[in-house]
Length: 432
Image (cartoon, rainbow, N blue to C red; front, side, top):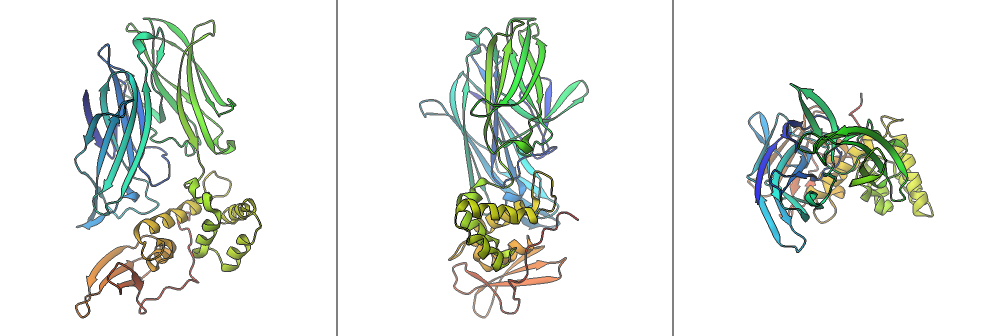
């Protein structure tokens, strides 16, 4: 088995010969997690296939430290391929990924670190496991995906895996593709391309159909293309699909590509699973009572009590959604940026400021959720009592908050000299 690895926060190559790819040039999912996309095509050897594994990790997920005029973050990426027996086929541990930013990434940062790893494997079923570890915070992310690579030698017509592409450009007679890494198509409101290869006899004409279907086979988008394979029997192709994501319910969908002759008889097909989510992770709605209580930094207590007083979860959720509809900075659009930012801060606080209680309930969590990332963070030790002190400075607000670890167990509390009042509420500042 052979493997290659490419990585970068700007560009990466795509699977197809004569086609390149650009990263961080178009919309990507808005969550904070490690994401993965896979693509497989026929290999150069008769019994081989090429498997490409793309990963993306948002800068806002990584902990950065000041280094001169810049901020530096780093993480390690590990990719494991297992076959159908569970035996490890290949394990790749990358070198430390070092990221540099001109300013400390915040919850609204859109930069991502994108990598591509290329494996040569025989046809078969594989489990691709990816993990990343932040070098400063030790936070870990994991994701996995099952991939079944067919033996195209046994098929008169075959279709490769399907890669989602958010943008295509032509440069110097070569295509430059921006791969969409992840499975949530909610951000692709203007549509996307399905990229794939078709294998058949040389110079053969075929009709291609691409569709998006739900579990009941309801069709949400369809596109047709006519192609002709080259002298090797291969055709690289992409089809544009524009599903009405604003009118589609959240859930699981399938992208299906089919190849047929002029008789319209389907000779080969390939599927790719995708999903549609709105805003931040749907896990917020798994406990609607908790989600409502977490509104304490934006809502009044009377508003929270009114929502909690609803007799059913469905009514509480309806009231919750109405509250956020009234606080949507861009009404009439699919996204609610205030909702996304607010709960991204809740999740960040839970990951980073947990003490004797959940992170969103701590003093640090309160200040972070309302005001966001501080301009600077300073750590000190009081020489008189050896208590640890953390100072957050918000330069634009001309404020400073001092947190003191009174117990020695990381339970930082606001100093009485720099109080913060619950009457101050979160306010979205991204839209002027």
